[in-house]
Image: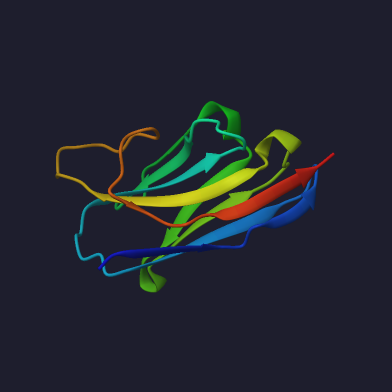
Length: 126
């Protein structure tokens, strides 16, 4: 059973930084995509913001390029999102997601994912 558990969310002032973590367990495939999504209330569509492949290749959505960094620690089965220069519009519930991939497939930020965490809240005040 695959489980993803996010942590590290909180409240911060604009211009500040946070690091989110996502601990993964139960996933055994060697090729995968892992991503961070966010969803701002109320009822806004969930958006993909960063994805990383098993080989370390990363892709970012435009709103976070240059400010956010996605990374992984394979020894700890943990995904990270380092968020700098935070803005009030970054406030959202942040989710991590995971999907096994075929050897020929590349990961995309807004593709579908099979496994999801429950999210961690990030609030940025002005």
